[in-house]
Length: 174
Image 1 (cartoon, rainbow, N blue to C red):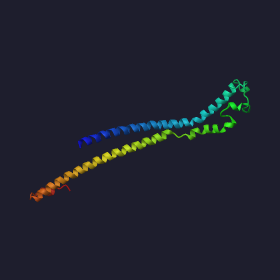
Image 2 (cartoon, rainbow, N blue to C red):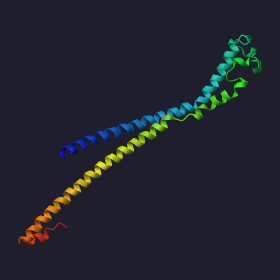
Image 3 (tube, helix red, strand yellow):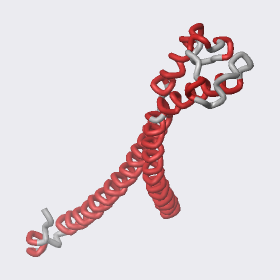
Image 4 (cartoon, rainbow, N blue to C red):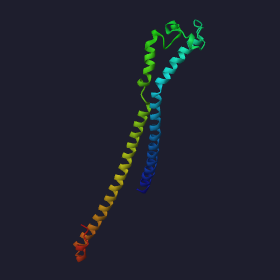
């Protein structure tokens, strides 16, 4: 009995350490979740920068347009740009640009799932620890009832053997 009780106590200590680790882990995941959302919010500005970079690159390096050379005065109209060299500004690729713009909204934050998984793990550990505590309480109550029953049987035996004492009336625990 003591060996199994010792094993239960070791397991309880380990489970409590795991629980505290998981709680700290949730704190880190919460930070990562927020950072992911912040980065997603910045994605549209990054996309705009990418579109401007594409235009700048085509204007600067295209062999068909060599008048730009970084000067705003020589900037050609968008209709004059060679569409086959454009990826996002190409009228034939409007779906690509729309998909790229909607990409942050289409992605699911993976830290939401990790956080939920950690919460479920903590709840499972709570349930196990509560079960162990309730078992311990039940064992205490069973032991107390067993002791009381033995005392009552001794008193009954004394009464049956004519060893009735006045004190036994006042010593009653009920």
